[in-house]
Length: 31
Image 1: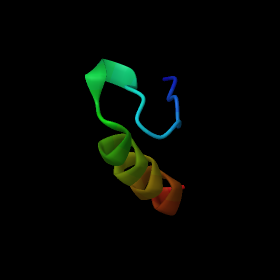
Image 2: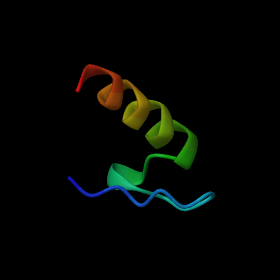
Image 3: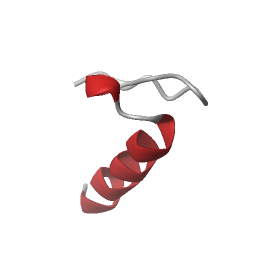
Image 4: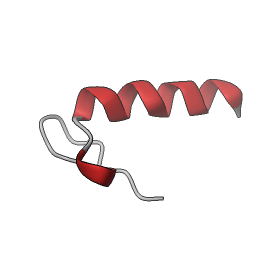
């Protein structure tokens, strides 16, 4: 799964940067 963590850009499945950042943070905590 590829995420583009650039402010304002769209990432996987059209998620907003904000949503992707939250998701990434949650996954990072679980790791």
